Structures are given as structure tokens and as C-alpha cells.
Image (cartoon, rainbow, N blue to C red; front, side):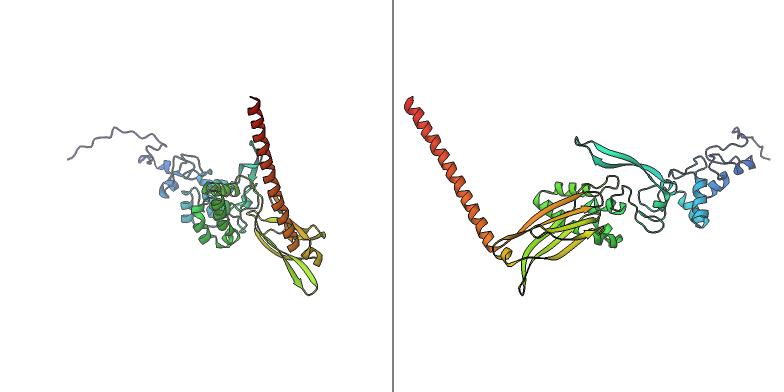
Length: 349
């Protein structure tokens, strides 16, 4: 008959050793070693950490989080438990703890003259978020952390050109508002360099920095149009802004006419407008048109263009030619005077 030999290992009552239950104490299963509101037995059976109150380290204890998923959100128990193991269920780079309880974040709202950032703390409430919907709240409104009119989802993906295709595929409706940046990126790259183009993207898209880049005017054309005895100065204008155009004003400075948009909200506007003009302006004079565009972040741009008559173009060309000839004559005269001065000094010597 085999002889029983007692174990030299002791298990204190009510304690858990190496993450295992004490086989000699049935009561420890009912305990709550990490004080997260869930029993040791429940956490062990469902794969939660019995020695860490926040298994997935998302900022909220397992008991609170399980109750949120199962009771507040109405999810089944298995799904609720699994979500307690994932720190960011919807994958929007904001932990579930922040989305469920809200959080504070530092936002850069501007810059001082010496380049020092101006910042403020903002509270992002749970009403602005939804832990099951990436970058939006429960009603589908896009989250805009820095309140500059650009959704966080756009700022996240559009700041890096390598992520544009993913954004266009999964957020096609939003991409339609921003697809113009592809051509503008190429324009900046062509006129300057790729580094400048990438910097433009970073300046435009950052969810923690209020956008401070003015609207972009990619087209501003003027031409004459005759309709019977009526003459018009035609404006063809395209304006973009990643945060949306708030105001767009177009003036015919000669005649004081105005056209524009107030509280528009769209990221792109194509304006085709006719200003009443005259035969005299068309044949002998010109019309000056000024455009001012403002976005929701307070940035603005003002651009002027002049529509000239044929005679005005000729006059300006002759004036430019005369100025060039005059400048050349002045340089020749200066060269002659310098040479004469040198000769005089040489003779004196």
C-alpha cells in the first residue's frame, strides 16, 4: 500500500497563489482580489485578470466596464466580456475609458509672435463620443476635438498621404469633400518640393491643433461677355478650405457690386458670376474684382484680379516696355559715368 506523503506547500486561507485558486479553500472563488467588482471565479472563467482591476488598461475597472457594455449598451455577456479585454473597441485611437467617461485634452489654438503655442484645456464629453463608433458620437455626428470644423477622422487619415486610399475607401462621403487636396498637394510639390507639400498637409490636418491655414483659391478667372447691348465682367472662381468656407465675398470695385456666400459650410465652392459692366470699360478701361474668403477657424485670404480692355492691355504693355528701356538707359548712363570717373582719376594720376 502506497504511503501518503503530505505536501510541503502551504496555501493560506483566502489567498490566491500565482494566479490560481487555493484548492483547499472554496471561499476564495467568491472573493475579489483586485477589487474591481467582479468575483475571482468570474474573472478566471472569462479570461479577465484577477490581479488587475483594469485588464485591458483602458482607464476603467473591469466591473464598471462590464456593466457598461452589458447593461448600458445592451450587449450580450460574451461580447461584453470580450470588450473588457480590448482597450479601444472601435479602433479610433481613443481608449474606451475616455470615450465612456469623457476626458480632458490640451488643444493648441494659435501661436504667439515668437512661435510659442497658445493652448487651452478642453473637456471632451461622452456625448461627443461613442466607444462603438469610430470618430463619431451615437447620433453619427463626427467628433471634432479641436473644434476647427474638420472631423477628427479626416485629420487622422489625411495628414498622411499614404492613408488616403484607405480613407477614400472606408469614408467615401467625407473623401468627396476633401479629394481636391490631391491636386493641390501635387501643385505645392511641383511649385516647391515634396517636403513643403507634406508640411502643408500637417498644417492643415491635426486633431489637437486648430487649423490656421487660410482658404485656398485654385481658380480665379475673369473675361468679358456680351449679351446684345449688355456687357458683363464674368468671374469664374473655385475656393477650398478643409474646415469649410464660412464667408465668401466677391466685389466689383469699379461699380460697387457684391456677390457672395454667408455661413456656407461647404469645403469647396465654385462660383460663376456676372457683374454688369459697360462698353467703355470693355474697350478702354478695366474692372477690378476682389475676393475675400473666411473659414470657420477665423482664417481668411484676400485676392484681387483685374480684367483689362484690349486698349488697357496695350497701354500697360507699352508702359512696361518703356520702363524696361528707361531702366536699361539708366544702367548704361551709370556705366558711362563710372567709366568717365575712372578715366578722369587715371589722367590725374
